Amino acid sequence: MFEYFPTHYSWNMGLLMAAQLGGEMSEIDEACRPLQEIAKRPNAKDDPEAQAAWLTQWEKLARKVEGFAKRDEAAGHALTAGKKYLRACAYFFSAERMAGHASPKKMELYRAMVECFNRGVRLRREPIEAVEIPYEGTTLDALYYRAPGAGRKPVMIHFDGFDVTKEWMHLCGISREFAARGISTLMVDHPGVGSTLRIKHIPVNFDSERWATAAIDWLEKREDADAKRVGVIAMSLGGYYAPRAAAFEKRLAACIAWGARWDNKGSHGRILRDPNAARSVTGWVDHALWYYGAKTTDEAYEKICRMTLEGVADRITCPILVAHGAGDRQVPLEQAERTIREAVNSPRAELRLFDAEEGGAEHVGGDLFSPTMDFMADWAADVLKAQAAA
Image 1 (spheres, rainbow, N blue to C red):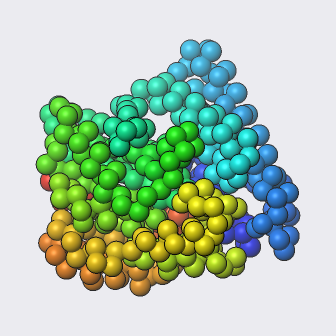
Image 2 (cartoon, rainbow, N blue to C red):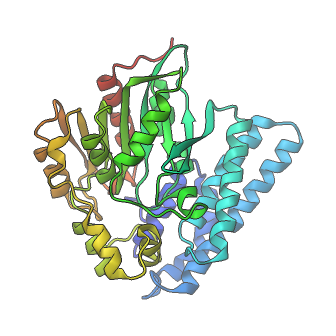
């Protein structure tokens, strides 16, 4: 993995995400070069001053690129402006993801990110629709990316994990890969992520089939969706959410765990207690309390321990793929192997490992997304019998 900050895992992953969401390396270097000496400090991973510097640098870059986008939009160059807005969105996301939830900056950066995203996809004329999915007395905000061509299309429902959003899901490119193979994508801010946590204040719940049921109910009313060919994909902690949903929501025809998560006690439970563990974001414990809706680390630990595929995986009766990085520092390989080993009633249970030579060896392929995404998109097209438009 390219490690711009040799001693700072969270910042390295954040930088690589920005690059793979469409960021430009020269701009990323502009934001990160002043952070290199700060990253070398012994306490940089937990130092509030270091985190403030990260936010300052990335917000500065995001607002600069947003300014260029506004200039191009005013000049009537919609496509060019849209491209810059989406790049600014990636940079705002890079800042927001590391901000503590109690900081006013969190919502300021989040709203700027969403605004840039919405302007970008509109100006680029992307076939994406902002929708609301009815869910237990409220709604879940989602993005529906339509595959080209007429008729009903298979759909992949995309859930998240611990610390990204539906906008991130689209920017990473997975929905475009599905669409190229004739599959639409419904990207959902489920409980614990995105607007559902930030605006509606709904923390995560362990029984992800509730979100899947709401999504399929919504898709069944769409004239452009084939409700008999709907799969679910989720990344990171979603390696638990997608298999759990497939086990209990029998209308799902395929399941992809983008990174395994057999037993969250062995991942987030361990990370919660070990300050030296590889943590996806700075301020990880603070984010975990917010995400799980817990007041104490003991309460968070109890909720983490409820997330297990023990007694669940054998209920999966659709095809399942686990795509896992062989060098994942957050989730042990054994969790990927066990998920497939225990999915005894799936007609097609596959584990696909990605190593350093091919790329995608880190957590959810964070070092290089494309090998993992290409394989998952091909697998989904095979299972859902999708056909790309002529």
